[in-house]
Image 1 (cartoon, rainbow, N blue to C red):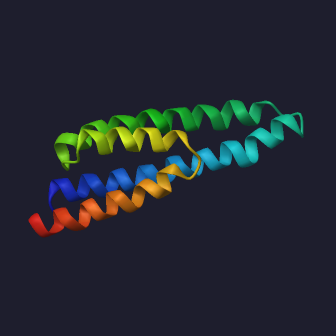
Image 2 (tube, rainbow, N blue to C red):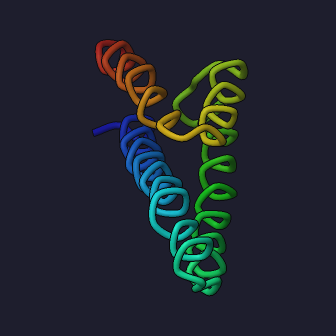
Length: 105
C-alpha cells in the first residue's frame, strides 16, 4: 500500500467520524440541552466535534500534497464538514480519487 493511499484511507475514516460527531451534536446533544435542560451534553459533544473538525481540516490541507488532491477539493471537503451529512457526500468523491490514484500507484 502506498503512503498516499494509506493517508487517503485515514482521511476518509476521520471524515466519517467527524460526520458522525456532527450528527451526535445536532441530533442528541442539542435536544438534551434545549429539551432536557442538560447543557453539559453540548459542551462535551461540541468540544469533541470541534477537535475533529480541526483535525479533518488539517488533514484535508495535508492531502493536497500527500495524496494529492486539488486545492478546490480540499476546500470543498472543509465546507462539507460544516454541513450535516456533508462528510458522507464528500466521501464518495474521496473514494473516486482513491480508485483513480490506485491505478497510478
